[in-house]
Amino acid sequence: MASFEPVARAVREVKNVLLEINLVYSFLDTLIIFLLSFFITFLTNVHWYFAMIPTALYFILHVTKRVGSISLLRVEEKVASLSEQLRTAADNVGRHNEIIDLLNKEVLSKMRDVKVSYFIDFKDLLGKIFAMFCISFLIIFVTSMNVRLVNFGDMFHISEKSLDFDRGSENIASDGRDLEAETQGNSDIFGDPSVREAGKNPISLQLNPVESEINLNEFKEVEPKDFDNAPAPGEISAQQDAAYDREIAREYKEVVKNYFDKIT
Image (cartoon, rainbow, N blue to C red; front, side, top):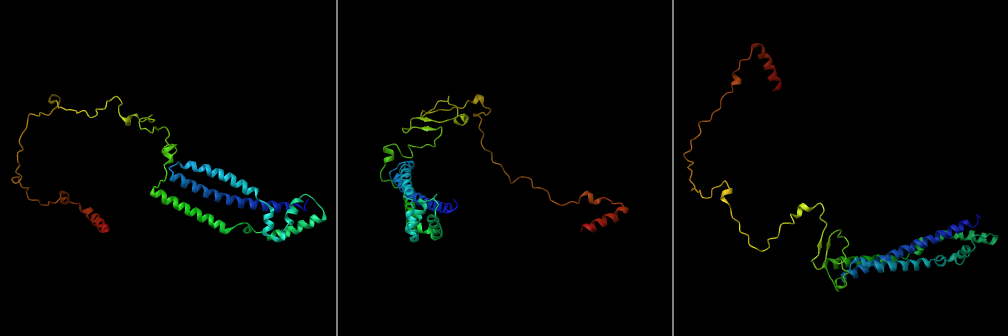
């Protein structure tokens, strides 16, 4: 068993590498399809959710085709020294004889020449990335200009305004006559619903002098005030505080002197 296990493991690793490369290419191609679909939905004023339909279909078909095309023949085409030997070794996994053992050893020695870069088309990869960049730039430019070619969204009610799934409990009908909103716990901010709307009817207001402390019949003329005859303030002067006249005992004078000498 030890003679063919390394070959089986090598064949499995090659197929996994081919699978990963094909998945990457499928993801890039699907991303391009999504950008194109999103661009079309914006031009036709259709909700962008509908761009996921062709994207999902293309991804399923493309991945199925890519995975089904994985073959060891591609490895043999990139590495000419493995021509027909790699497929022969893979077909005889589990068998053991002198010829198969020699073939397995030769295949394992030549597998070192297989590189991942052989299976990557860098020109194609850069072309896909450049295409995504151009489409993304075009989408940003068109959305900033708000360009609409055909208004299919409003015609078939599949626009972003018609299919707004983020309204929650608020339900606003398209004709503007139906308005329902959840107001639990917020009744104070909407006022008293029992108060009827005055509309455009004129309202006359009248003050009742009986219920007011102000007598509207008593009016007095404004009397001018003469501020020039106000009495001038007396002369402002400083006086010595009474604390400075306090006599300090003789035995404390030396202590007070030393205290002020230290703080100064």
